Length: 88
Image (cartoon, rainbow, N blue to C red; front, side, top):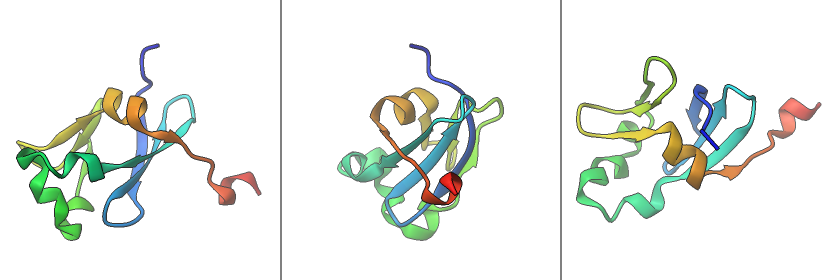
């Protein structure tokens, strides 16, 4: 299955993203497993982690020229998330 494009994303703490896709499914993605990779070391800084943008077209999240996460990574390794506020 081809992952949907990202329509919104937010950091809910210093290691967790909530990502909403074009099909309105939402995934929770924990970056902890990436932090052992030197390429992602900057994400350990909470201020830096929270300062990302959605790539045009919704193809990923971008922090800078070196650090990004694709919609595929976020879709495949994120877990289904139901926002209690959206249910009411």
